[in-house]
Image (spheres, helix red, strand yellow):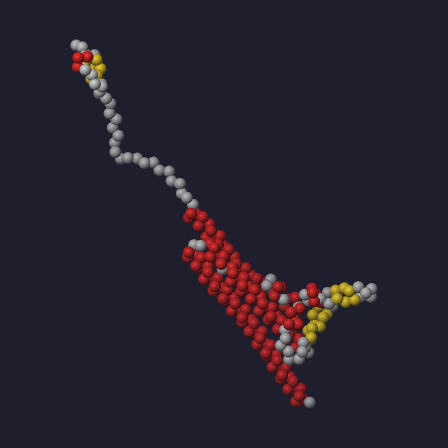
Length: 223
């Protein structure tokens, strides 16, 4: 009897070790995703800055958002395995309050009037099979759902920071490009170094008659 109990404890410890390995692997994947997000975002923004093309800066939003969803997926699964771990060490059952479940999974109780009502403070038990690795039953917990995890403070600040860098570079390059393409109107005044000499037609006076540069007959001049 004692030997059987000891063997059962060893199997249970081995089961917990497997769960811990899975949790650690999910955590590592989340860390790797953040590293790839930084690397790709930096590369795209560097190209945008070198070519001075604002639209390329927005291309960085695609990998950022993609990695944000993937990171949320892995973090949600990690939380599910943590809940499974806690259930295993508590005799394969986990007690949580009704308000901690997703709304569609909250349990309704019938009162004395035959009306079903959701009691938020009521404790709900989620059971799992012995030595199970199935984390799906724990997805009904609100904090383990990826739609809630994506807004988690542990990751939202990181990806919003990368998005802000991308948008800031886009605005900066757009402003710089608009200044470069602006037409510059230059008013110029041309001056010549040559001297303009205004010459006056000389007046020739003969016998009180003024002669200019017009052609006159000699015989028209009287003495």
